[in-house]
Amino acid sequence: MKFTRKASAVWKGSGKEGKGSLTTGSKVLDNTQYSFHTRFEDGEKGTNPEELVGAAHAGCFAMQLSFLLNEENFTATTLDVDATVLFEDGAITKISLNLEGDVPEIDAEQFQQIAHKAKDVCPISKLLDTEIELKVTLKN
View (cartoon, one colour):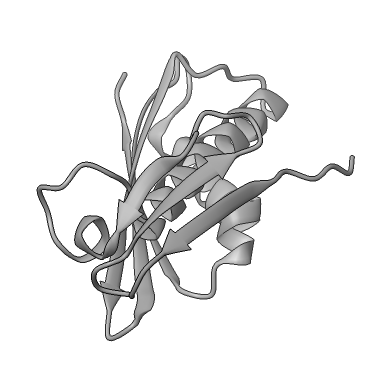
């Protein structure tokens, strides 16, 4: 399978005082605001690159895990994934994925193994050049 996806950014002004907008091909983001303040401070409405990377990673990982579970004849009731992106000294140095899954009839060890495989083969994990930590909790 081969496909492309598009997103665009527009930035106006200086790095600290300027503002930008992000738009995705699907229009889920449509001139969504981002700025120095939404990236490095809290309180202003808008997004930032790090939370978008976190959302992409959490979503990709959850979908990848679902496919791997299906290969082993399991279907998740729910896969809840939080991604925490650590930015320090000008770089993303770590992403922590916190998975809580409800998967009927699977044991904790097998869930752990499949989850770690999903972390390793998820396309966004493979793209990122940083430490990726995974914490797994099975609710059954």
